[in-house]
Length: 152
Image 1 (tube, one colour):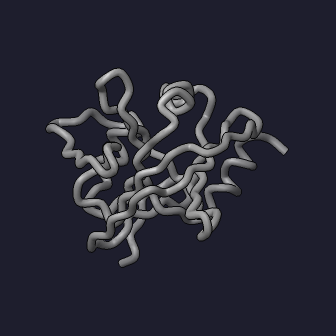
Image 2: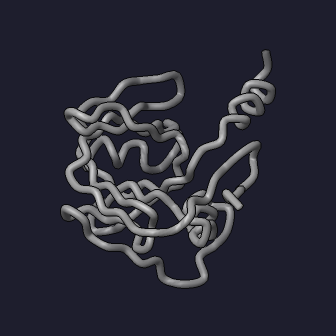
């Protein structure tokens, strides 16, 4: 099978959209990630998958911590900004949660500490323990078949 067929088939799985953030050398950086899943309740573990070409790939291995913000439908522009699909036209609002940056006004935010990593082809899977979680209101922004969608 070719790469396009595989990618199109994987795009048929609807996902929420998250922004993974970390602070590196005093700068907050982030990226859009939809390869995210809950792994365990005891301990509370999640996993994210990061492409080896992503600029955060090496940074996350150094900081060993990250914030994960689950986006609302009103935060679609943030997804596009962090995915480098558009430029930011205003400042991005962050909060510190367990001393880790997360995005303000997200449906939920998690602060995470990396426990293990696993090589997976051209990606690395980061398995992290959730050290704090906050919940807010809102409806999610979804990604399906290469397009943003909402529940409505």
